[in-house]
Length: 71
Image (cartoon, rainbow, N blue to C red; front, side, top):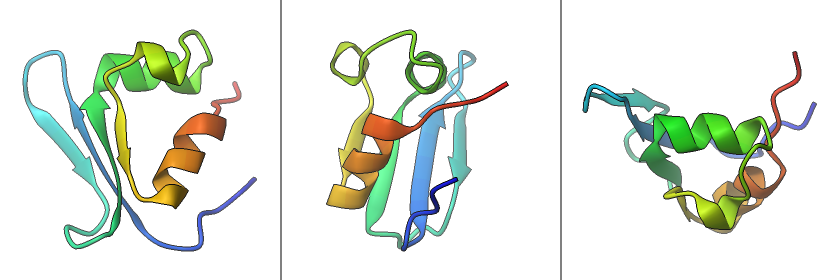
């Protein structure tokens, strides 16, 4: 398991339009987009370039490239 060296802020838009947020508000590493695209990305069912996800900061970008859920 890889743990990022700094804290992240993740903001996802739920199917209902509600925003789900995790992490400190002042985090410089950020990920945001739709919850659906996030789920499709971390299960490797969709490439990052085919999602609406955006990353702010190099660590956030790298994390989106390698994130994976194992069941």
